[in-house]
Length: 222
Image (cartoon, rainbow, N blue to C red; front, side, top):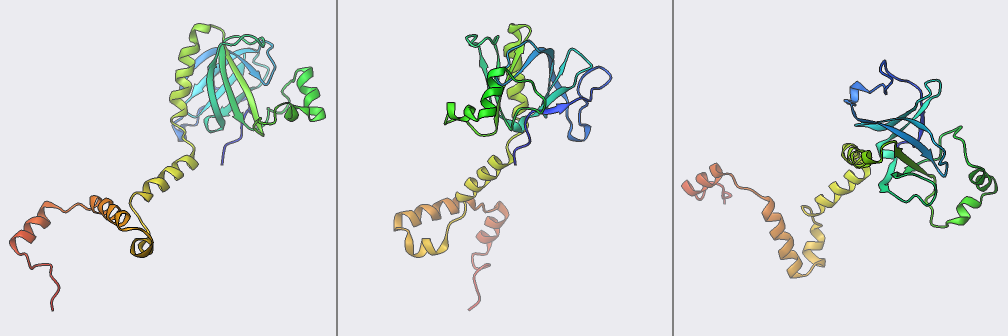
């Protein structure tokens, strides 16, 4: 199951950074001054983004306000965006599984769309329960380092469903249906399946030596 998306996060450590989960070996990989934008809100939201090995954590410069965190498994995709046509600075554009955080201010247009339900009508292909997030570094030159940190840490948090499917695919190379081998598959398919199965079998050097010394050692008694 995908972890929930953008969540409220108020707890800071003594240095003002996130409180890491030591049991999960969570560590901060990168901290940057970043403006945080949810949906189509492009007003300046200065703060610090902490990229940890488990999640993204952003705290505003105003310490009286709470911040937000996003588990990496909730990040559906992320990419570098340099398109300033909509008022955003160069940033990391991401799609986050789940809705916008509770209490997040919306632009008047976004609020009107949500109220009359027209947001989904505008884009019939839009993903349900997905929120756009933009992370705009104060220094655009840091965009590459931020993107790399996101990629590296996201790789540490693979989707368990993807791993399960990969395991099932790997098993398909080793196992086959016996009845299909006997009746359904053609001769060429049977030979190929048997060849693949034989490739999985490894005979130890000790066993080969015993067989060579006594060829009848493993024959059934009549």
